[in-house]
Length: 207
Image (cartoon, rainbow, N blue to C red):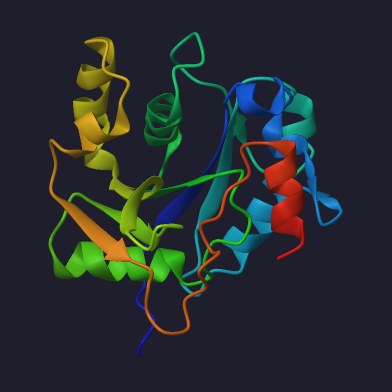
């Protein structure tokens, strides 16, 4: 298969409160000896469809994130408004036609994530593409924080968040979205396993 060419910026979402980890900054917790945010950054740099730039969305410890060597931007909405605030910040700062979002707490995501989302978006002429993955009950469910977005969606997201909207599904549901299942033979069942607690982080390390 010919690798497509596309101008895409990656955005690591590390702006949450980390409330289920006792309020610690999740992206700076170590996974296999390196901070989760750095593991995520390295995984983005290894994608089969290369990214043009990577940004980090963080709301505290900004200098620690800046030390990873990529631009860091806090939410433009106050009050830890959730992943959509990160999406909004990324769309405002992105200088390419497409923005890929990934969370900082899922360090084993597929190395062909960008390529598969991009191909599905192009084939289906969609505004966005979203990964879907098998969960413990066997059902394949969308993973809305793994999303490829056209930057033309900025206006729609500004309107949605200014109206008080915070739920990802409520916003993505307004647009043509390609859902991309990562359940093919050869896809890792743990690719989208995330760490919400320190115990889950230890479990992930042992995979």
